[in-house]
Image 1: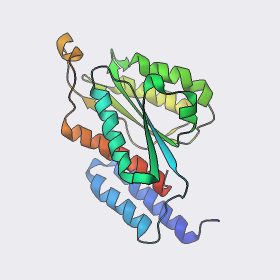
Image 2: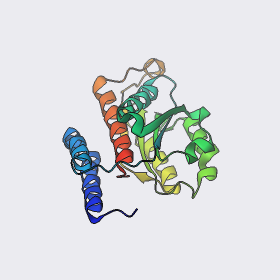
Image 3: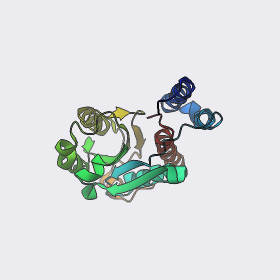
Image 4: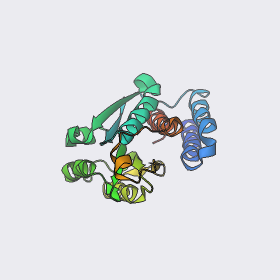
Length: 213
């Protein structure tokens, strides 16, 4: 059934609010509530089709793993509305990519580059998914020593090739590890940074369930 003019206005309003969320950190909690209000006060926008969020991550010392798990926890607040799949980079195959409606990629930056096993994930799946996942939303989580921008740019270039749509700027957490001992030591991501990852996962799932993305 075609959407009514009212449905379309509500969808556009929800999309506008969600864009506010991902572009202005100060608006996060207000925006999340407003998306729900927009969707539900006037009858709801949720799709009847179960959507799937795929979170692919690689981590050696635990930082990116914690960020990915936090995003998954946030996404699962949508309950049955969105299926959240959390896969280690080496376990993610083309069928996992093709069956997902949205993506979060989480990786450390090693030597000013995304980690090798995350690059391997993209290498193994790139051509199998090329021109088959156009327009699907994604976000990136980077755990870095002091920068993170190179790894973020690499993921952005690959996502551009896949014709994915970024819903937010890369979320980069710098842990300021500089010595060999600090770099190799197991990481502990600060609670406030984990909350940021959780919020991003929640908004991604909410956007999927409401049909905003």
